[in-house]
Length: 79
Image (cartoon, rainbow, N blue to C red):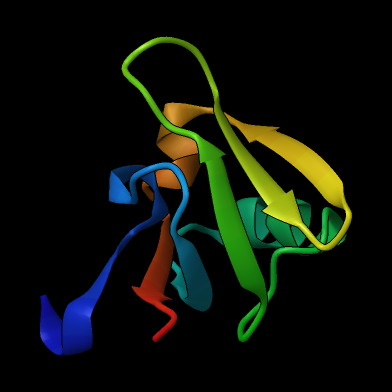
């Protein structure tokens, strides 16, 4: 992918990434923005395995994201 941008759903646990883009419609973008996931935010992946929701850390909070949502959030690994 261009500039190492990938869906959040492919990021392994323990990695930190920065939000580059959102690939959904207006409703999806509004919902994601309301929970604090916006362009430029740093996210740490806490849990990402084949079972259940993905868990991310956003600041001091934890958020569970479904697989569909996690694949619509494009991120780049923080160096």
